[in-house]
Length: 102
Image 1 (cartoon, rainbow, N blue to C red):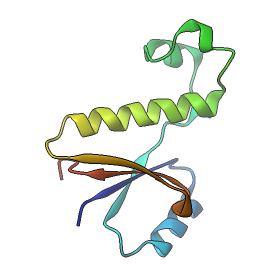
Image 2: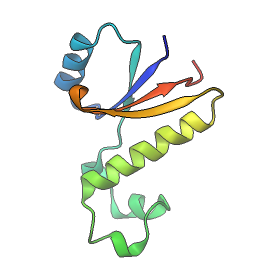
Image 3: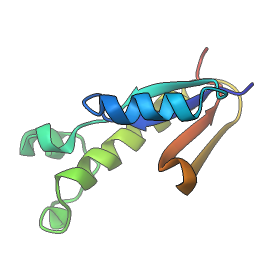
Image 4: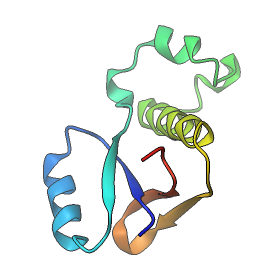
């Protein structure tokens, strides 16, 4: 079975438990999302992912989501094999399938 990585905030323990309960048939692991509420302006700026003009456009959750996806894409790119990104509304989230150096 192709491994599944689930982007999820570490502090959402109940949501993670619910996911595991409902999807026990999947070979999955959690990828700790970056918590946008905990990011500083310096961390956002030093990431190099955002131009100064978007500062007033996006909120902390958008920064956290973007940085989480970027980090997971970097991990996926470092491994061999195919990777598929899928947003599955019925599972309420974004999931990455593929060879994650496992």
